[in-house]
Length: 313
DNA sequence: TTCCAGGTATTAC
DNA sequence: GTAATACATGGA
Image (cartoon, rainbow, N blue to C red):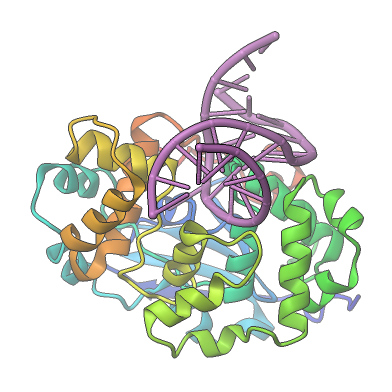
């Protein structure tokens, strides 16, 4: 376990248009971002990151050794022209309301293994519980990363090789229940190079999906999450309980609709950025149901910055 | 206490 | 092929 390599912080500013950082980081794509005072703190790869945003800027603080900003711009998809994406959405009333509710929401570009593993842990779990499991997994099996002086320890997401080495019992201690067997087997498959996640990126979407479906605990929905959140396949359209509810209520007059019908409708109706539209509908429904509580964490971590107002609106 | 959660695998028809 | 059911755990 390597000690922190440096102690100095670097500040990087990005000019942006239409970037809603809070919506992006709380929309159920990634599970490691925490509101600390008026900042968001998380880990990308081996790098601790603190983010804030204003109307025209995203400001990042990272340790000096990670100050090349290419990886961060890629993760946050800062260069994406959002207006082009929103213009491609269908012009119906539900989409208009969803965009009005969370305009500026972006899809992230995450590491495939972290995304795959996190979503294997997501099945039949609430987002807050997924966050707890992932945090525990990182603390138990991740590596310490460099943080500012006085900051509590922070850990990277554990590699597949690391998780393949530990027992299912050790994984279960992170409260993941029956998902431990799935995660462990998936880690073993990666470690044995049965599926190469890097190669999936260059496949056509159907073949990419088939590759992901080889992992235990991965069905259509989780495969589509990874296609969308890690690989950037913008037509992937994960249908979970919230999106099912959104489609039924907003497009099928509340009727019960077979999953197969929802799948065909999603592919026909939402266009080339269907996955983006899906994320707007997902976040809109959760917002409407009052399921987004953006309160700063009440721990010593919050004292790194003075508590500020909630970003929730 | 009961229901349900960014589902999947298994079994039954 | 579609429909029910078990699965670990904990928030609401």
